[in-house]
Image (cartoon, rainbow, N blue to C red; front, top):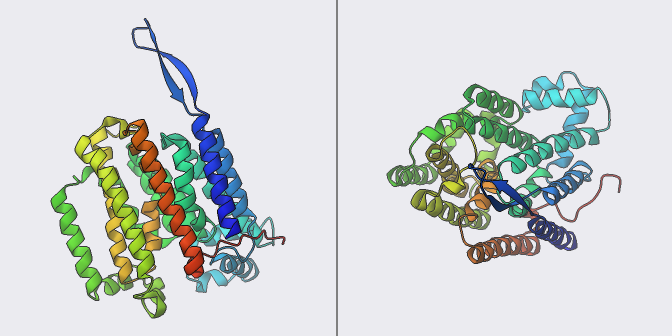
Length: 377
């Protein structure tokens, strides 16, 4: 509990400093007859914060994160047994990366250091480029991504590569987007669901389609069709379709569903109803297509969690979509006036902080990040 409170306090302080670090700059208007003043966010505290989180991920002990010890074991097996890659279920890209790291060190901490450096570097680039409020992005990154970054190495790598694909889609570079989706797939096969990413902006988001898809999701969840589909598209994960992975964790799924549903409504009201162009980033994709893109991603992040009542580990797949909240929420809150933005930000932080503390007290098995330990301890 102490470690949890300390890092929450650190993140909030750094976010506050980031919010106060914006500098005022003068820009000439198009006619060069007058100037206008605006705030320029340099992102310095955001970068420092994420670098410190990167260090915590790189140098974490084997007990930090539910899968960290497994990745140590995988690395040792790959570099010591040439045939291991032929019998393991782990993806080609991740095995190759282990072999590459193994050429420089036999210490299994090497793969933890290298992978953490890769995906944190991409996250820093992504937030710096796409967020309109670095301070809030710091907070949301901590609550949505930090814990996963200390647990799910392969999926975090896939997430990072999908962020690059998202950037490519915004810039209408479809071939490049598919290249990064393939790279993500080579590190975690569940990333295959993002094969539709480049076409999502061109599928009109509307209420009828949303309701129809929600009904389909409910039907699949209530029947055995979901298991059959997963057994076809991801048979290597069939062991997740039985035992304690099925029908458990309803409390956690309910919380995540309600949280994502609230975020969806918050963003929906701004983008779909108000249609404020300020929520759109600078890209080759016009604002209407960007709105479709954002709405589809956050809709899936909410409705997809309904599957979690059948297979509780579905929340790991939804984590892909939750990742985009680190820019969606800050960018949308820019639409609100100063006082409303403060209230909404406070409520978001309060709800997520309360959840983490309650989970640590009543369900500590949900999170193996705390207490934190360095690998040399």
